[in-house]
Every structure is written in structure tokens, then in C-alpha cells.
Image 1 (tube, one colour):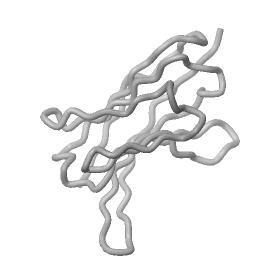
Image 2 (cartoon, one colour; image 1 turned 90 degrees about the vertical axis):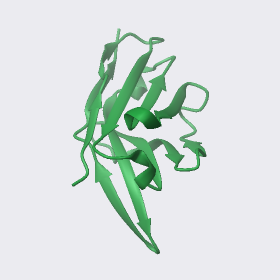
Image 3 (cartoon, one colour; image 1 turned 120 degrees about the vertical axis):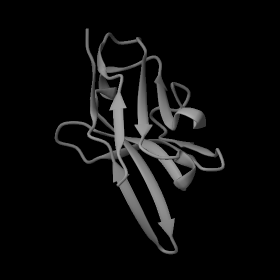
Image 4 (tube, one colour; image 1 turned 30 degrees about the vertical axis):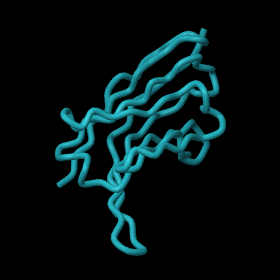
Length: 119
């Protein structure tokens, strides 16, 4: 059973930084992609950033230039460095791991970590 455990959320002032971590229970090489999604109150969950097993990255337009996804293969951990945070970044952030089987995807999710950007 895949387990993803997020950490690093909290309260930060606008313009501040946070780093989220997502520790996987197994090798992250077993996943085709890992990423971060977020869900603000009253809104749908949205993609923030993803990284393929080959290292290709993809970012939402709203976070490009401010957020960086990275990974530590030895620690089976994926990170999201968030800089220049804005109030609109406030959301619950979820780690995702995906295995692709032909046309199908198996998605695994962490429990989420709250990020609040407020003065």
C-alpha cells in the first residue's frame, strides 16, 4: 500500500516562503510522476506542479517563477519550494503519486497540509 506523508505547511506572511515535503513509503522511481495539487475553500482541486520520473516538470501558470518542485531519490521524498507567497496561495496542499497502466492512471494521495498566507 502506497503511503504519502506531507509536512511543512503553516502560516506565513505575504512574500514569505515555505517548503513542503512529501515522503513516500516506497521508491519514488516506481511512479511515473509525482506532484502537488491544492484545494482552496469552495474551489476544485488544482494542479500546482508535477515532475515525471524522467525529471520533466510542469507548473501552473499562477506559480511559475515562484514555486519549484524537486526530489531526493535517496530519501524517496518530493519537495515543493514556495517563494513570494500570496494570499491566493492559501489552500490545502496535497501530494500525488501516479502510476500509469496503458490508458489508466492509479493515483495516490497524501492527507494534505494546510498553507495559509496572511498578514
